[in-house]
Length: 205
Length: 205
DNA sequence: TCCTTCAAAATTATAGATAATTTCGCTTAT
DNA sequence: ATAAGCGAAATTATCTATAATTTTGAAGGA
Image (tube, rainbow over all chains, first blue to last red; front, top):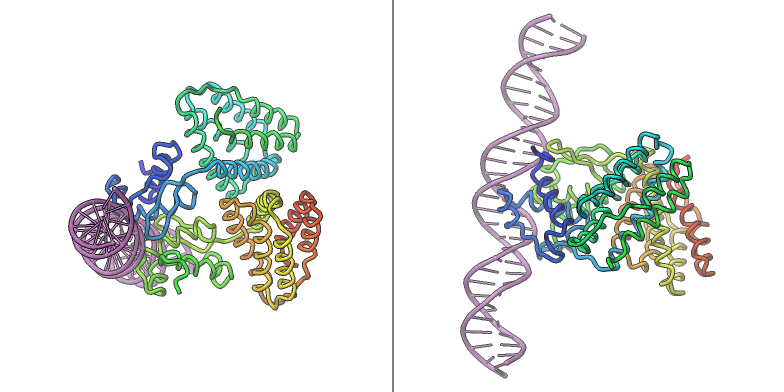
């Protein structure tokens, strides 16, 4: 099934997944012809895919010198965490009035899935889904898109840190956020969310 | 002279300027062949330019149905203002420790330019420069890029509202921000900045 | 041994051509 | 009149080919 109709989009998605999962290392050059050959396509859609990756911050391109997988310094990781914190809190504040009992229950369900996740990948997926479930009702598409891209950047860092040994941490913050939201304490929920996102971006021990 | 080396980037910049200034209306279809002909180029770089505009939120693209100049509803204008407020405050907080006396003086100079601006375009340019001068020292490139894109979106709204009659408002908020920063009251400066950005996005009377 | 120079190879960027899809306007039937 | 159907024109998406630039690596000189 075509995930996205246009070839360029499919290529972009595949490459994005590869970069986020850490399967290709930061700094790796992405050669348009090689990628094109791999996908059985010409390099025109590949170039467009590159542009999308660039916009998402997953790749960097220097004119006439090609595009490489974006690297991430400690400073950049912190930057992304700070941006996420600011924007997710904003989204939560705007989503709060639209959060129903059903949505909160659903979020709790997703949170439980995350606690039982067998590996980092599954945990990250549940984590992302949890956040999105709570924030989506804000109805601000541009904001949600920005948050998505930032979460992808965060995930890169997460995967690079502990791909091997890892154990599912029962997520106290998530639970606390739900408790606060159920009690109508939006500000408090936002404060926990903020701390949660900022600390989540800390370096692995 | 070539502003940006690659044709695609030049085309993107030109089109972006055209959209922001309001010279092309929201909803206008952008035909790759027409644009290509206008620039004396083939449509390959044009398509790449479209992708960039899309990423900046200046155009929307539906697969196989082309790309059109992005529209903006009242809700979207508010969304952009909220995002700007959140991110600019974050940038200011991180920039504050690096703000020297010289930078603040420079900002004041720019602010005066803005007060004497003959038209909206000039005022907006000075306004943008003022913000960037204060925020750039945060040293967070991704954040600054995001703010740039949001400011562009804000400018679109501004230009669409009062292109004709307009008088330079001596910007009290800007001055107040500088006073607070000079006094080392970063939090207070942030609060003014936040209010300033949010109210700046209000609809024309 | 190390640096410079220069040509071959690789790679990017753009152009031109083609296939596939959508849009538009006309005809025709109700 | 109005709506459905059909075909031509326009448009998007892709491919193949070409020009321009960068990288690579080897040869020659300091």
